[in-house]
Structures are given as C-alpha cells and as structure tokens.
Length: 184
Image 1 (cartoon, rainbow, N blue to C red):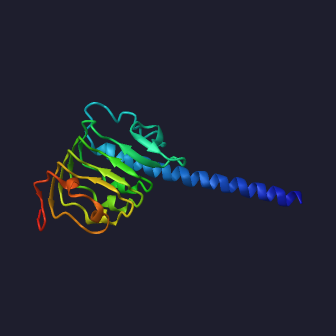
Image 2: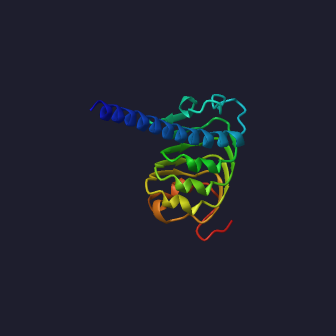
Image 3: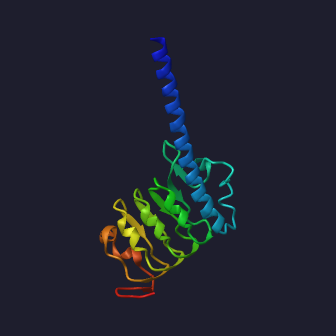
C-alpha cells in the first residue's frame, strides 16, 4: 500500500513539474514574440527599457498584462513615440485579447499573422503610418469586437467578411487610399 501511495505521489509531482515546464515554455514563447517586436522598434524615450530578454517572464515588463498562467493577454503601447514595423511574431501571442499601439509612428503593413489571434477582442492601431492592405485574415477572428485602423495610410478595399461585418466604417476613417474596389 505504501508503494502505491509513493508511486501516486511521484506521478503527481512529475505531472506538476511537466505542467510547470509547459507553462514556462509558453511564457518564453510570449517573451520571444515581444522581444521580436521590441527589436524592430525605435523607442526614443526608452519606454520599453523594462523589456529585458534575459527575463523570460514578460509579465514583469511595463505595458504588458498577463493572465494567471503568466501568458500575455494585453499590450498597451499607445502614445509612446514608438516607430518601426509591427512584428509578425505578435501572431504567436495565443492568449492576446487587446493590442493597443495607437498614437505612435508605426510604419509598414499589418502582419497577416495577427489573423491567427483567436482570442483578440480589441485591436487599436489608429494614428500611425501603417500602409498596405488590411489583411483579410483579421476577419477570421470571431472574438474581435473593437477595431480602429483610422488615420493611417492603408490602401485597397475595406473587407466585409467575418469579424469585419460588425465593424463600423469610422474604424477605417482617414485612410485616403482605402475605398471600395480600391487597389494598393
């Protein structure tokens, strides 16, 4: 009987260690994605100085919010004077619910990889210098309730599929090259 109890205890400990390793690996994946973003951005005021890639837990970094499993669920990077592109690696933040990068100087295109963020509720990229078409993949995010891409340099057509069917036209305002039937 003691052997059975010891075996159960050993198995419970092994399961707990394995679970901790899985959670740590996921947190490292989140840290890697955020490090890729930071690596491509210019940050003249040092707003992202706390984003130390040697600290594998991004939950201690400023402007990052995590859930109880130390997974990133929110990025609040609005009005930080950041410039540069959004990293495609942001699409690896599996539990991300809110991505707010408004009022900066972000350039380049919206990474289509963001369309894989199945938990995303809000995406706010207004008042930047983002160009190119709106990725159709964003329409696949069934949880998306808030989208603001206004005041950028987007081009092409405003998608109407999936999640886009519930997004008001004001979310796309002041993108002079964005219009029905438009091409980039």
